[in-house]
Length: 344
Image 1 (cartoon, helix red, strand yellow):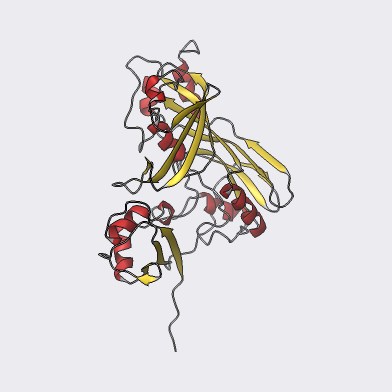
Image 2 (tube, one colour):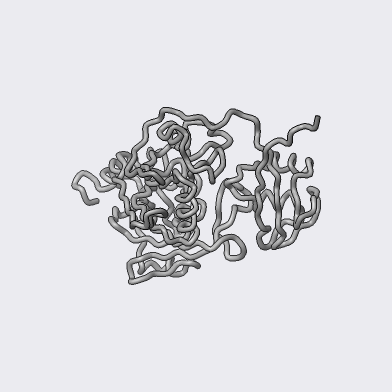
């Protein structure tokens, strides 16, 4: 009797510009972050013959070039299936095809290595009794877009396959509206010569900061993204100052594209990293004695909230738009920055 073939998924991508010459180094740089494949795991997959380049099985030392197509057959472990968990959800809208939820900071969107449970998907499976679109696979059912674990705010999740495909098309075409609130170091100013001299920075209507770059995986830290000018993926962020606090500001940011860590990377590139960002913030602090200086040091996450989400309902065709209130921790941070008189 023949043995059964273990289930697997294929991770496909294209080698970006100026790659390391060796396959193992190149794919460690360019494999999508969402695949959650460590260098050691990639090395084992190469050794198992699970990696092909342009259709041919490749070895660790084989040469690769820009534009080569890589496919990695990743076995799906026989661990327990993603299980429903009774986790409270903040639901703004629900119908037969989709649900809009307000995710708290600290919740991972879907199971992944290191986060097998306690995720939004676990909570949704309990809420629906397992009825989610299967398009995203077992670990990501219904998930059309994501926000980082420590970013709070709005997500739409598909309950039907028709909704999943329709929503995914809108996010792919960048027609869905996504606006964020961010607390950053410094106050972006169109008159700042440093900003005007930074590549990729421009201003629209003298008050809207536009950041246009390409984004790719960081060359040495594969958990990070980095601004680049060759290869990578086109990324555009816009922002405007809603309130200034002298050494910090509250911004409204909106996305023309939706790349991993896009707002966080772009604001750091502009010299206005997000308060509390452990990855891109560089440990920045406010000047001693500035209102809210201690609150900034103590803030436990990147100060980023997905406040507004708009899209066309993929089944009914209705215009849908939702807003989420500022979470309590960011409200306290803003109050501290404003100072005792309310306007630092």
